[in-house]
Length: 488
Image (cartoon, rainbow, N blue to C red; front, side):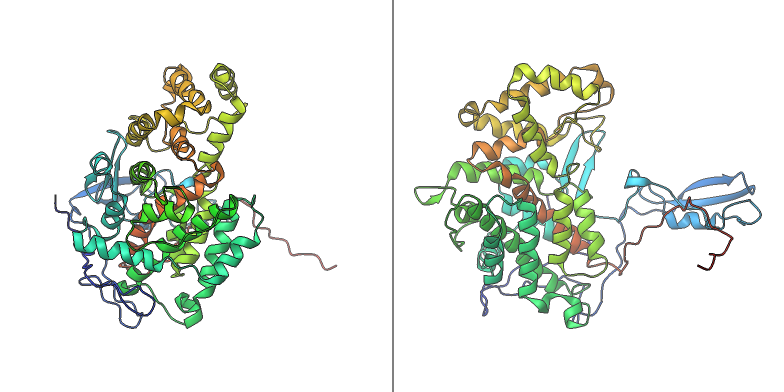
C-alpha cells in the first residue's frame, strides 16, 4: 500500500555527516521555511464536502441557521452566527451574545484535522497512516513505524540506515543533562528527573528556543522541524536510559551507530546478552512499542500540541507532555495498575478488589477506556501475544495471575459489561517490562518514550498549518457585582 499525504510528503535521503554527526533532513515538498519565517499551507481534507448541512432552529428567536457539515463534523465557530441580545433575554452581564459549545474534558470536540492515526471505536480498529496496527505489529519493526508516522511512508533501506545513524549520533547527552540526572536521589520519581533533564537539554542548546533567538523557528520551517524531531527522539531515549542506569547504579553505555533505536535503548540501559542487546527483549519491545506509538489525540499529545501552538520549542512541549503522561488517569495508570496488583497479592484476593470497585471504594486501573466502548481495544490481544512468548518469564511473577483473574471476572461481571468497560493494554503491558527485567518504576518513562513518535508526527503536521494558538473559552457562572468596593 502506498499512502500519500497531499500537503506533507517528504524526502529523506541525505547522508550522515556534519560537525555534530547529525546532518539535516530534507524539507517538505511545497512547505518551505525561509530563515524560520512562516510559509505553511492550510490543510484541506480530500474528503471535504459542503453539500451537507445541519439546520438549527433557535427557539429563543425563531431564527433558522444552516451549519455546514464536513467530514461528519461541524465547526464550533460557525455557531457564533447564532446569537441573541443578552440584555433583552435576562442573561448575566458576563454572558456572551454568541452561542458557544460547552464540552468539559473535550468529550466530543475535535481540535484539529489529521492524517496520522485513525481509530474506529465501533469496530475496534487502529490504523497508522492507513496501515492496520495488526499488520505493523506482525512486521515487528518499531523504527519503521516511527518513520511511517512522522514522514508518511515506510522507509526504504537507504532511508532506514540514514535514520538509524542520525538517531544514534544525536544520542550524545550534554554534560549538564548527565549532571542533572545524577543530582537526583536514586529513588526519585522518574517523572521529575525526566522533566528536569529535558529542561537541562534545552538549556544546553539555547539557539533552539524561539524566544532566545527572538523569532519563530519551527512553524513552516520543515527542515528545522525534521532536525528537531531526530534531536527530540534521541534526547528522550538517552535521558530515560540515564535515569534507569542511575536508579539501578549501572554504568551508562553510549549508543552504537549500527544499532536500531530499540537496540540502543537496551544497550544504553545495560539490558544485554553477552554484551549485545538481548534479542528477545529487542523483539518484544519492537512490537510492544508499535502498539503504544500513537493513539490519536490523547491527553499528553494534546498537551504537547497546546504548548506547541504558542510556537514554543519541542523540548518545552515535551516537558509539559511528560507531566501530563504521568497523571494517574493517563500513562501513570500503568504504574498504578502494577501497584494495585502488588496490594492484591494473589488471585484469590481479586473478588474482594472487584467488590470494592463496584462499591466505589477502589479504582480498577487497566480496565476501561474512553474510546473503546462498543468494541475491544485491538492492542490488548496483541499484547497478550507478547505475554505468551514470555510465558516462562511470566511464571515467576505471581502478579500475572492477579491480572488474569481480574480480566476473567470483570469480562463477564454485569457491572463492567453493562458499562462497556473492557481491558486496556495497561492491564498487561506492565508485565512485559517486568518480564524483560526492567525495574517497575521506569515503566511509564519507557511508555512515554514509545509514544513520542506519534506525538512528534502530530506536531510536525501542526507546523505545516496556519499559526493558531490554542486558547479555550469558558462559560462564566459567577456574579458580576454592581456595588463598588468600600474604601477602607
